[in-house]
Image (tube, rainbow, N blue to C red; front, side):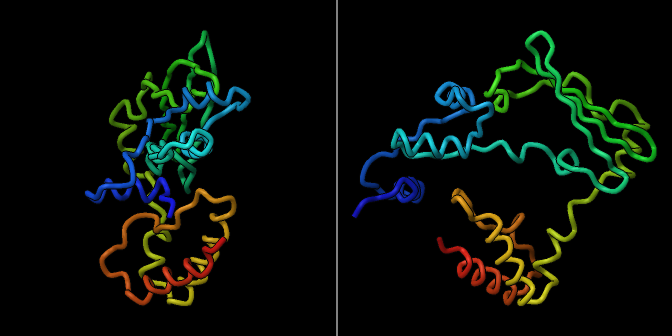
Length: 209
C-alpha cells in the first residue's frame, strides 16, 4: 500500500522507521518566484504544496501568516489601521498607521523589493510604533483585545450552536483542499466536553470531500 508524504513524515517524527527517508527541502518565496515566473505573488504554503506535487517531494510547509500581532492585522473600535506600500530605489517601504482618539501611531519597515518573492523578505524597522511616553499611554489605553468571540464561544455556546458554527466554518474553509480545521488557539480550561465533542463530530460530518 503506497505511503503518503504525510504518513512518511509523521512516522519519522514519532520515532519510527518509514518506507524511506523523507526528502523535504525548505521551500521559500524566492525559489517559488523563480519556479513560477508567471505569478505576480507567491505563497510559501499554497504554492509550495503545488511544487511538492509537481516535483514529488515530502513537504513541511513553513508559513509566515501569523508573524504580525492581532493589533496590526485589522481595525477595531478606536483603532483605525491603515497600510501603505511604496517602492523607492529598489527598496520596499511599508508604513502602518494606527489612528486612536488620542494620537496616531506609525511604524515604518523597509527591505529590498524582490518582486513576487517580496513576501518572503524580512523587513527591518526604520520607525518604531511606540516612540515616546504619549505613544505608550495611547497604545495601552486603546489596544484592542483579542476577539472575545474567538475565545469565549466554544466555552459558552450550546452544543447545537457549536455544531452549527463548526459546519459553517468547514463549508467556508474546505473548498479546494489545503485546509485543516482547528480552534483559533488551544482548548481552554473550562471548555465543556459536550461542546468539544459537538465540534469534532460536526466538523468530521461536514469535512468530507
